[in-house]
Length: 287
Image (cartoon, rainbow, N blue to C red; front, side, top):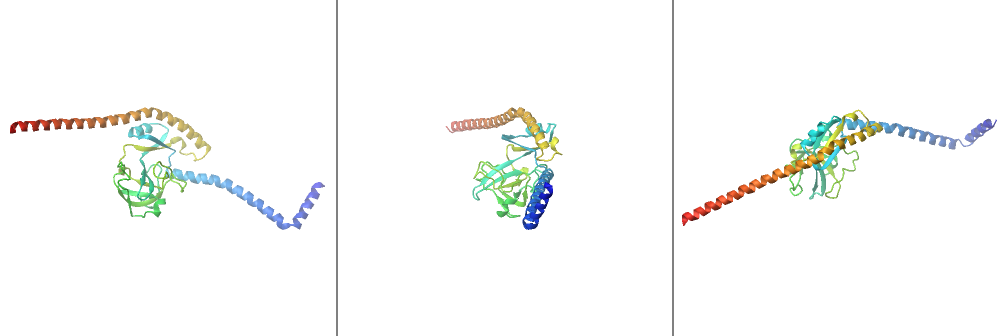
């Protein structure tokens, strides 16, 4: 009886104010649709991101070292069973003082962190591809110039490059930022891609790694996080033995250079003594 009375009262209320009833009903439908949409969009966005990462072969981990990485480091890592790819890369931050721009140069790789060309082509020797953010400063076919004073350590082979393309990279999902640095104003304005041959640095700046056990696992998933936590622990164990070995390599290289310079000094001293002796003999003949 009570339910019947409540139903009759509800129907009477709806008839007396149908506009309010349908407004509330519309709000409920919108809320449900929004909730369902959000629930469906999240997995779709994650899947789209994962497809993009796999297509461009985004690294699972990037290793950095203040001592840099050698070919011995690369060979050592390539022997580890769970690593799918090991790709060393040069990275150089440079402040272009005249233009007040901070640029991060990467050596181009075609096996990991593959760039996506928006226009032009990938660079060959003496050519450069710039970040799409640099399109407001440069044009395709133009010249990119580095002042001698900006590259005082001669880390690059030359000062002028032909701009042959503009690209993005899977490394930067947020288009508003390009990372931080300890030069200039502390923020990277844009990146640049050069062939590896255009760098003349003593050691690689970083190593890109991908792991076999996550090749078919979706990024951002709990499973991926679980696998990568184990991979990081495993990687730390692998690298432990390389710390002292890398330091020893650097010391040995420095000692070789020191010995080389010592020999030059010794040879110079011997030549000087010989010249002095010849001068002395010449004076004796004149007397």
